[in-house]
Image (tube, rainbow, N blue to C red; front, side, top):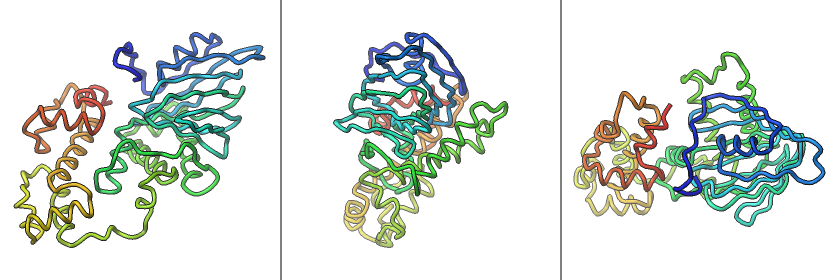
Length: 333
């Protein structure tokens, strides 16, 4: 989390509920569920009670959180996560990267992986959906939608409207998922249902929050790419494990190597081989997330998608996703 010296946090069950009247226990549970934090009760509170009902849905943790007293919290950098707070009642005032936002049922607040977060007031008896998203998952989702690499992290706007459009759909979807937490046999426990739901959450977040890629993401027009470039991209996406070379891709595209390189740099902003490497990393990441750690290995998955030099592979993976590939496999469900 905030630093490499932090003690390991015990893994949580996929669904859990907690209640406490003890502020110290609440701080400990908040750290275990979300991030290392310091919690204080504001003056005037005659009682304290915290309740959290939470559920892990793929790379997303959804918590239905309530406090019976005005409190404040301080976090270190989220680093490996993006975070959204959606109030269903009450309000939450916070500060991150110089932005002071008051979240209400009409407006959510968002935090990126950089900058400390200060929650100056979580109003008593507020009910807030606290949504923690793995950084690698949101960035991979955007790359999948745009079909090209992106600069990381995504510069999400600090707040988001919840009253109409994609923002309202996101709020309704989050509320529906929170409602599943208490069910005896929730639909979200089924992978065939949970995967489309968490992908939908990520897609609606990217569509509703403002960021540098949003206009491109929502544009009804297909990218204006030369036919030669499309042929090369389609070949790589159809079979990224193939040992393509620049010359081979140019032959598939029907142009010279130099022409293809210029097309990639102009329209995709990377070289053909860098595009192929990122595509392979996406496939490796998806397989590691979905794999059973006891039944597969990082080396096996890397070789499956065309990586032969494990040292260079591990370096590229860590640079793209912020963690070693073994950590992704170890944390897979």
